[in-house]
Image (tube, rainbow, N blue to C red; front, side, top):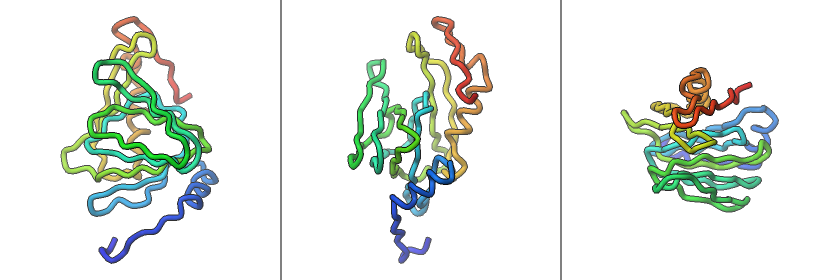
Length: 173
């Protein structure tokens, strides 16, 4: 993108195009220092994402339940209705969950060389840490969440809790 070009995005039209296509993410820009994308429906998410930078999420349509890990352990949920936004600072493990007909605008800093996004799973029965996938996100359009999910769900040992023996079912089915 040329410095004199400043993209103006029509969020409603982009949301409709996403819904019609069946895709989950439309990258709006990833240039200079920033990344912006529109995401559709994250109802399937079970992991907690740790960004190497701050993140701002604005609910364009629908309501999001933003599950997040508390520093002292356990998790909680922040409910973000349409037209509202939430700031998620670096280091807060979070899991945005919302219906397939809901859309969120996400704005983050582009990843620097060597920075890793981390995807962590916890046992739903006893809250024991299960597994972490760490990836460098050089281009968000490659869908790093899908790659992390694929690695996790293909590994039965990663889905089996050392604490209580619970096995997470393969959610890709």
